[in-house]
Amino acid sequence: MSKTYKIAVVNGDGIGAEIVPAGVSVLDAIAKKHGFNIEKQSFPFGAGYYRDHGKFMSDDAIETLKKFDAIYFGAVGLPEIDDTLPARDYTFKVRTELKQYVNYRPVKLFSGLKSPLRTKTEKDIDFVVVRENNEGEFVQSGKTFYADDAHGFATDTSVFTRFGIERIAHYSFQLARKRRKKVTNVTKSNTLINSLAYWDRVIAEVAEQYPDVEFSKMYIDNASASFVLRPEVFDVILTTNLFGDILSDLGGAIMGSLGLGGSGNINPEKDFPSMFEPIHGSAPDIAGKNIANPIGQIWSAAIMLDHLGETEAANDIVAGIEATTAEGNLTVDLGGNASTSDIANRIIKHIEAKKLVTA
Ligand code: NAI
Ligand code: MG
Image 1 (tube, rainbow, N blue to C red):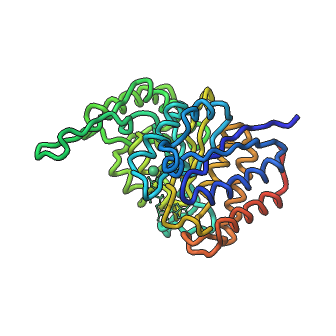
Image 2: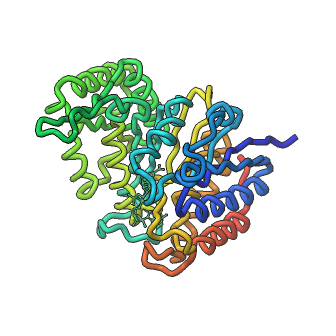
Image 3: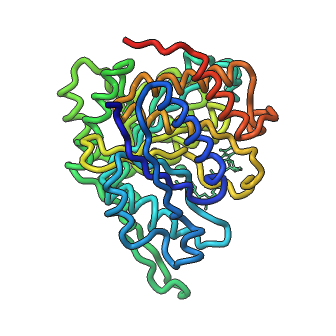
């Protein structure tokens, strides 16, 4: 009997309603080709749901989502809804309650795309940002005091635990072993002399257990410049929640568009379902026009299948993306005129045309 994966589909808001169905159509095509089943159930969660129900998801949502093998997600946020709420009430909630402590964000220049870094090629831009996804700067532990007074002030306290640092470090070194065996800890311990000095210390201890992996440390300011000037020095970037959030958008930009970046919020132990989403937001400025780039969403489907153990199917999707960009089929953000659905259909054509190579 062929395998069945239960996938919860959450379009979210804005372009989610266009790019998630595009991704689902690719998933259906790849499942058919590789002989497994995808059982989907959609959930209307997001800022639109908040507008109608006063909350971002139903009260039983987390318990319901736990029953799935994975969550395939677009993005949340709408211009008319308070933008401090989506992260707190949806993304961060799902990521922490389902212990998705790894945020896996690959950066890769697809053939046929011109990076704004004109002289760099596919060989130079191919790394993964591993962002600590459950603690650090985003624990939302803080308060605003006397906001309207002259002496008003506000705090947000970062939390870094040995347990949290060790597990993300182990994940990164093990990932590096499957790649080019290089880990760069991106930090700022020269100024955050308590929290990030501790982060560095615990990572250095873990690094000693992986003598076969080249390990180095780089400050976030230098790392930002290096993304642009010499991206080829990176393989696996291990970094904090805030730094990883910013660096992965920069990674999207050097690929050529934010719309290209895929990601996984991963619970490596598979005790809980992981959630796969593009790195960008809901892009309300271009929603409803069938022009959004679906590649980040489709690449997220590949990362999801890889996590579920369908590695050949995952590679097949990435090859389909690459064949599509290589022939110059591009959406507006990349200077082309193909629509969201054109790109999904083209990728499906390539997937169907390519012979299945079984190991
Ligand atoms: P954004 O990523 O939605 O958009 C930034 C720019 O990139 C826009 O000009 C947009 O048109 C463009 N863009 C993004 N995705 C694209 C795609 N697939 N194809 C072509 N162009 C694309 O970020 P922004 O504008 O800062 O935020 C919009 C909303 O999304 C906000 O409510 C924000 O809170 C939310 N957001 C949600 C995230 C999530 O659910 N994980 C992550 C980031 C933002
Ligand atoms: Mg972000």
